[in-house]
Image 1 (cartoon, helix red, strand yellow):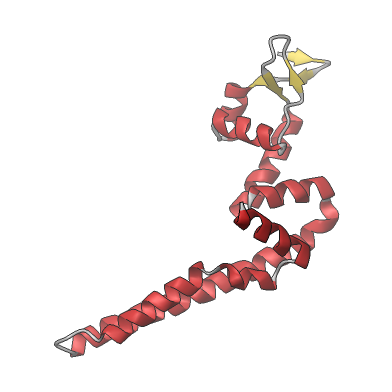
Image 2 (cartoon, rainbow, N blue to C red):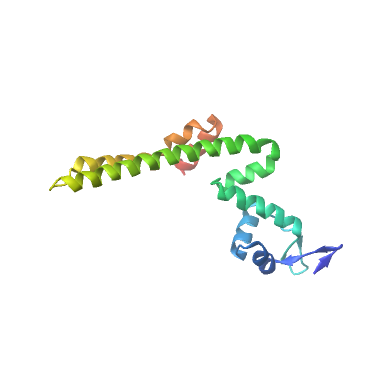
Amino acid sequence: MKTGGTKLYHACEFAKLAGVTVRVLHHYDRLGLLKPSYRSDAGYRLFSERDLVGLEQIVVLKFLGLPLKAIGTLLERGRDTLPETLRRQQAVLVDKRNQLDKTIDAIAMARSALDVASEPDWTQFTQIIRRVAMQNDTDWASKYYSDEAKARVEERKAL
């Protein structure tokens, strides 16, 4: 279908072209991340190639580990906030990687201890549990977010 010289795609065609599901398109539309360029007379979503660029931005940012709400904020504010957002996301991922490395090291130590001892040293396993628990602890993220963002997180936790 064409409107004003622009090729339009129904959701199923657009999803196939983009490599996502129709459900993802509908979800992004509900969240306001990707609004279709047009609606048919029957109310169906119609997407243009310009929408494909927007979807690619969402997919890339999601791949980098940004939550959808952060992607929405970033897309609203524009390109100026991208460098700072990427810096923060990089710091978060480096921190997660460090925690994973510590957990892997604790597991290696426990395995080594099992190789030489007839009985397992349960303190080694306790260390593994502590490291994994630290990984799941969200306090580390507070280093990277503003007081306003932290307050919003606390408000959501209270719900």
